[in-house]
Amino acid sequence: MRGVAIAAITTAPVAASGFADWRVAPILLAAWAVAVLGVIDEISPLPAITRLSVQSLAAGGIVLCGLQITLTGELPDGPVTVMWTVAVTNGFALLDRFDRTAVSAAAVTAACLACAALASSQPAHAVLPGALLAALACACLAGRGSRLGPSASPFTGFVLAAAATALTCGRGSGTIVAGLLLPTSIAIAGAAWAARRGAAHGRGRWIQRRWAQRRSTLGPAHRSRQSNTKALSRWTSS
Image (cartoon, rainbow, N blue to C red):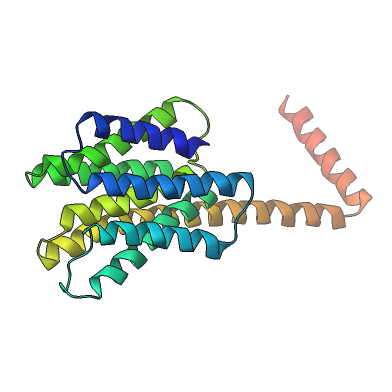
């Protein structure tokens, strides 16, 4: 249910601003569909094909509204936009499932997108990522755990992907590539950090297991000698 709260907090300031950018309305409608799908998945787990199908339909909806990657200016831009949006959506969902860095990664991405929009004199494009950043801050202050959850994480990933697409739509190829790589690179960096920390944690647990196995293979006499040696060392030191 956390996704509904984050979606509502994100929508409120955007609606209050009067939807300065006409592309924000279809983005939020599609993202709400993704969030509701996540809520249903929380109540009763859905097959992966169902989730991907609904996410693809939501991404296709914003493409039909005229929001798509304009790398070639031809027909392939639509399917590329759909696939990239779905990939980023599930990237943040997977990152949130396996590690606690998804909130930080999403907040950094939203802040970067908002700053990029302001720096490029496009304040209308800064409203959506700024509202999402405020929603993520409220979620952290609520103190209900550091994970987004199955409904909030795909909503967040979808909004970030669509916001990056809106910011770079119709611009040069270099700007488009840089804008699209921003959420992807941050998600990859977060996943790499999570994998590194998980590997270090796993190695520590492996060492503990090996040491426990070694102690279990030692005989009672050896363990008694060890305890006597420790007692003698404590007595001599005192």
